[in-house]
Image 1: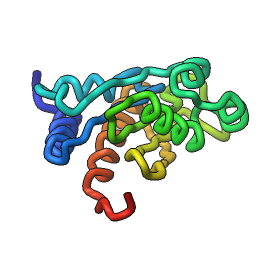
Image 2: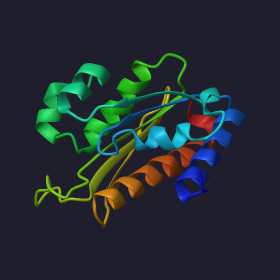
Image 3: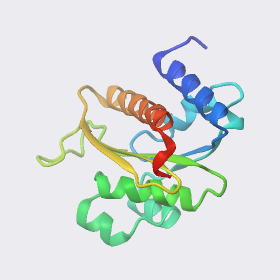
Image 4: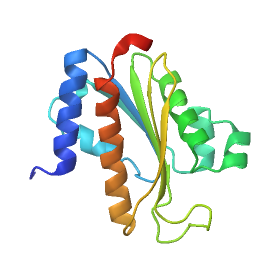
Length: 169
């Protein structure tokens, strides 16, 4: 398999996780498991990657990750509140996992609204015992471009999280 930007990011992430002795889990909606797929393409990733949840529907976000139904109703699946709840739910349902990432967005071509146009993506990263970091972005391009850019942002955010000082544990 040829080396790509995503494979380089996943390899770099794995190196940092392994050095720190940490394990990761993912929760994905609009990427449909692409973050987990890129990660598991890295040889030896079983040493630092535990599991991935693909929670495409609101019901699955609620059933598998305990995202409150009222949160989904009030803010919608593509919201910082929901991805923060997704990271918390991922950690709650993943014993032995130290950090998580969650993504939810509108990859298109349909599904956008004036408030949340196609390309709107929310991401959250969380280390166990800490508050999540959340981000909303508006990504250009078609469905594939939005999903690829979201996957890259998810990996980059995890790398940044691992580079932060551990002082606020």
